[in-house]
Image (tube, rainbow, N blue to C red; front, side, top):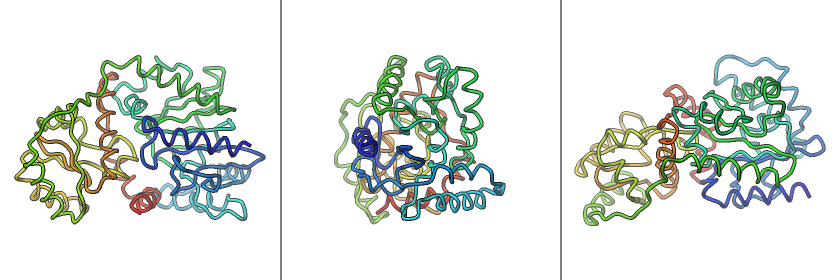
Length: 359
């Protein structure tokens, strides 16, 4: 019955765009010494029991007794190998990279999501202070490298948090990432998320302005044609009052000019392309491609709005827009560091996830 409950809560949150976009987030269940955690390549919205990888919890605990290389690539490759070895004998699926973190949390159910409202807090200048004020019993984790380093950091902090608060950390906010929520029942998970979202919404100074705006349809059509020619892909376009404010000039655009979380890098690229004149779209696209050895996935044109190469990057860019607006309630936006962005872009785990997302 527990697996059915895990499937149900996963699908419910996965189908709600307020909580999950595309492949973001993962869920897990601990039962009879086994960790059932979402496998890579499975979406929460339609996941079934077969979409969870089964790992031996005792074997996962042995990972903490091993010493890994300091080099990022060597360490993560070794940890991934050990993680895969923790799967039950008949298991073939690749577990979520955050399986180790799920394993160490002392709760039957764990639901990890990246809601824009939550990330308005975690991707803000005053995120840690605001978390302490709004959620005094929650654990805050500063920006650290995902995978083993993140799991180790949380593991190291759990004991001190329990001493400070008198309880296990059922809510963990991760800077520039999202939130982990753990509990013994699905109803308790729901109750914790309800409190999180209620408290955050009450703290907002404003909502995202999604009002419709007018634009020159002929000019937009011309930009479409240019981008389709240079990218060889279909183009998507979106604009509203919030986006038009952001693309009014380069200074305003700075609020969405980089990456807030790993998901934004995977699905929408590590940064959008800013174009200050419609006539310069092709030249700026080619310059971006030469400079970064990859094409932009999102192109923002002054006075018009956001264009994306295929439809998939657009939801994550709109998520970026929402996070930027929500972050104003907590001191303004705070992007991932350039070092962390570079790590994510070259990390095998995220390259694998990007390949799966592209299919």
